[in-house]
Length: 162
View 1 (cartoon, rainbow, N blue to C red):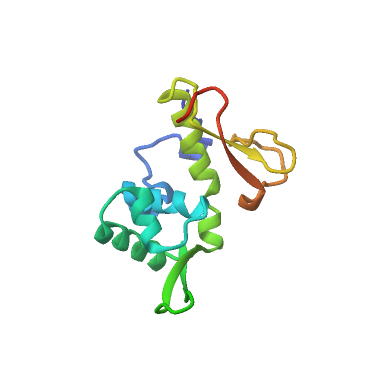
View 2: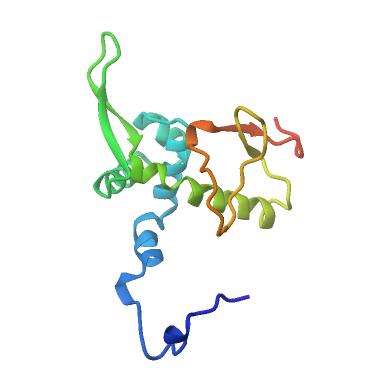
């Protein structure tokens, strides 16, 4: 079922959103698999470059491009760290704009669980304190947002894992 436009916008030939479309602009930024999986990994706690490469399962140059793109867009920031006896390196952390992508990630996961996993998700996302499932829905009600630090990722009970 399609959404409805207010009266003055119903004649779709009379106006165009063009390059002002927020969805199109977000897709320009996030539409490669590596870029979006880098965002996922940030939410999963990955911060170090070599871990991004291993966990995303693609080449180091592809991950490097993705992280640079996310940094340029203000989605992640680099912060230096140094392990004892080793050279200084950078780790990657989500910014406020990056944290705001949590509902986007969870929406895609929720859709994939339903339509691509046969309703048997490999992971579940729950509120850490209560264990209640976390899900994304469209609402008109003002509701308290669950922050990423309040979400715990668990293995789903519906599927056996190795």
